[in-house]
Length: 132
Image (cartoon, rainbow, N blue to C red; front, side, top):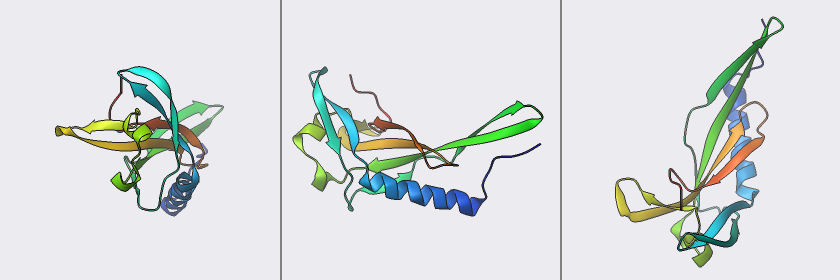
């Protein structure tokens, strides 16, 4: 049995690398007017935005040919600092109500990456919500 895996230190290094990549990545969100999509907005994170891991790695495995391949994903959450809001971001699907208080909102993105390679697998605008 073989294992394609990494030590805790290697996973931490990949996670730090992904955070650095995310700081330079253009994140895209749809812009809406009364639930009609009117365009897109791109946002490049600023130094005053918040970066955190929204989850521990999620692991899956696949068996075949006498080997087990272990793969993992993790979500890096980018929360936009209110100082960086603009009209397009506020009208986009990156803006979501806060679960405990629907009169409050947050603007952010979830970036899912492969814990082995650091490859970005997907970027989802909005934190814990679906707009329209």
